Image 1: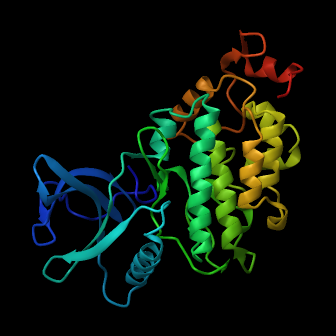
Image 2 (image 1 turned 90 degrees about the vertical axis):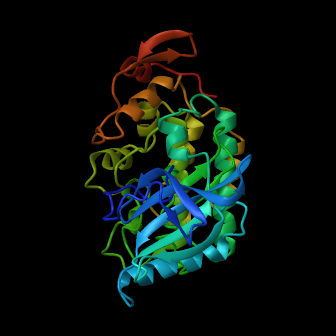
Image 3 (image 1 turned 90 degrees about the horizontal axis):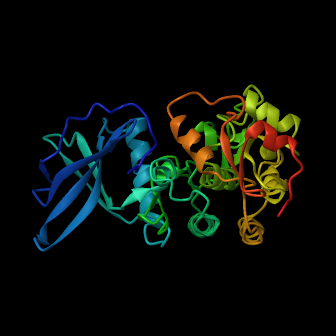
Length: 345
């Protein structure tokens, strides 16, 4: 379960089994580590034994007053609290400190069964389930639209920061550490590179749209739901996969990821170079609603390859694995499949 972006372990002691907040919470299970935080499954000891109540408690270092880190934490708390009431956002219950000088800060959040990253990579919940993909994606769109309507832009949207239930739905956004209320951003490379728009990774620009940055990430999330991976490590021409896409936008996504022409056309729209040429949330909803399928082939093997490659560098081309050709119910290879004339749905 992730309530923050992935990264190296933070210099925080192991608190599993300890009591915090004047003994009201017991940290019963360590859920994961981030760059500057640890997250625990915490038992509310005031709840009944036969009906225990659990929360997610995020533990962070409390730096010296006036430091950039403290300012960033206060910004995260303030923004998250302001949208905590929204249906598509994980509920923020409060903050408390521990230690003689309050050196540790704890954020109390609603617990969740899992997150979308694990649902995609570990559980493979969305493989060949277009109806479920649509349902989860619509909930992501609703959550992002709620935040935008409230004047909040997340800037670190990715599957690891989207909580869900064991069925892959019940979507709630988490980790507002990179969020802003500014419609135009000057902070570049906020979040995870694979989900960033090209303008948000290019520091030579003066500003970029916070809203459009989120919408690019939303399209990337749909791509991950369908294929189990992202199309490139970073949207910059120095990346060979992104450069290959820009060189042949009409066929690259079809030949490399076996998308239908309708799905490939939709992603070309979402990944237009000019932000003004990309779809709005409403346009995304209607375009996806009208698609009956996203892939030309059985995606189980594709997801397996993507899951195995999570800890490895992205490859410049898709692997030549074997998969089921639904058109003829036979087994073929990516190279042979790409060379055939396919019926488009």
